[in-house]
Image (cartoon, rainbow, N blue to C red):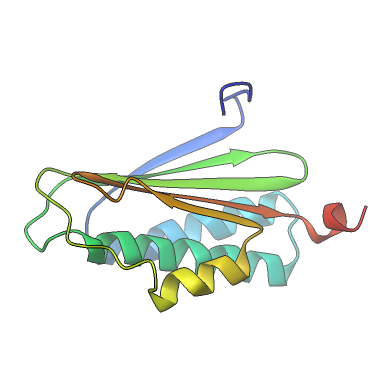
Amino acid sequence: MQNERDDNRIKLSFPVNAAYVSSARLTASSIANRMSFDIDEIEDIKTAVSEACTYIIKALVSDARGNFEISFLLREDKETMDILITAPGSLSEASEDDIGLMMIQGMVDSFNLSGTGKDNIVVKMTKKHKASIFS
């Protein structure tokens, strides 16, 4: 994302706690609505963000502390969501066969999971407007 302007980027930080997943989901929905995604696209974005947050929170060992950051990059035809957890301690083994990850892949146009080593997991997702796909 080196060449992309950051003036249309929204960054939020939440405690590593499943109780805050609904706040991340609601924020993603609000942003997608503001960008004029249709209801089906908004539902896909909400579910993808929820599943990604849940996946990375579960991947942390139970005593992990810290925050996870969600970054939304807004462009005319798509919304890119980066979700990053950096927390002290180690991560448990993350399974890329997780059903939640498969769901995410079906709901967004691009998906990448990286950094599954010690101390962080990064999930990057992009959802394009349907209209831009068929243009």
